[in-house]
Image (cartoon, rainbow, N blue to C red; front, side, top):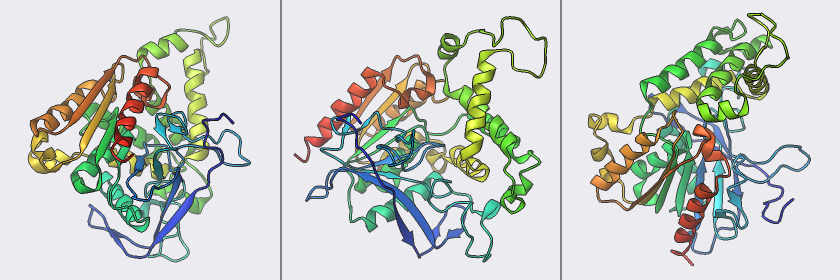
Length: 379
C-alpha cells in the first residue's frame, strides 16, 4: 500500500430501537446503520466530516478490507493521509443509507412486523430527508454536535444540501459536487425505464424474489446499462470505444454483440447484477426522483435556502449532462440571493457525470484548497 493509503479499515454498526418517522408517514423501528470512520476526532470534536454516498456506493469510502482483493473504497483517491480530504487533519465518517444492500437495514433484512420474513417489497419508501435524519441520529450517538463539513457527490450532494436545510446549525460547510436541486423530467424518465426493467423481470415476483430463491438479474443488468450510459459523456464513449467492432467482420446479427461498447455495457450489467439488490435499486432511484426541497416553497429555490447558514462549495463538470452545470448554477444563485458564503467551480472535464469519482487534478486541487481552509478554522 502507498504511504497515503489508509490501509485496512473495518465497518462498524449502531442499532436504534426507537422508531424513525419517515416522510411517507411510515415508521422504521429496530434498524441498524453501518458506517466507517477514518482519522481521529480532535479534543474539541470540531474536525468531523460526514461523507454521503451516491446510488450504488456505501459506507466504504476509503481504505481496503483485509483479505479481500479489489476492496478499495469508492472515494479512496480523495480521502486519506495527505489526500485532498486529509485524514491526518479530519475525522471522516462514511455512512450507509437505510434501504441499502450493504449493511444498514434494508429490504434484505428481517421485517419485525412479519417474524420469519424479510422486508422485500414491504420495506418502506425512504427519501433523502429520511437519510439525513438517520445520519443525524448516528452523529448524536457518536457524540458529534457539529460537523466541520458534509460532503457528497451526485445523490450524495443532494444529501449534503439537505443537511444545510434540515440541520443548519449542525454543519459549518456544505460541499455538494455534481448535483442538482431536483431531477429533471429526463432524469426521472431514465430512472423509470430502469425500474420497469427490474419490475417486469419474471424473477422479480413483486419484490419478494428472495422467497423464491431467485434474483431478477436480467432487469438489474438492463437497469445498470441504462444508468451507466448516463454517467459517461459522448466524448469519453467515443474515445474509449468509437465504432470499434469485437470481430474483424460484421456478424449481421440482431442479438449477438457486434460493437465493443455493447460488450462493455453487458459486462457492467453482469457485474452489477451479482452484487446489487433489486429492491434497493428501486428505493434509491425513487429517493432521487422525490428530492425537491423547493416544492414546499412553490418551486422558489431562493426561499428554500433562506434557512441555511453554513458556507458552501459547489462544483460541476462541463460534460456532465445528467447533472449539468446549469443545475449547480441554480443553487449558487439561490445561495447568493440569501447572501450566503458560496464558492463555485465549473470544471472543464471530459468524463461526464463520473468525473466526481476520478482523479482530475483541478478538481482535487479545488477540494484540497477548500479543506485546508476548513482546517484553518480549528488549528
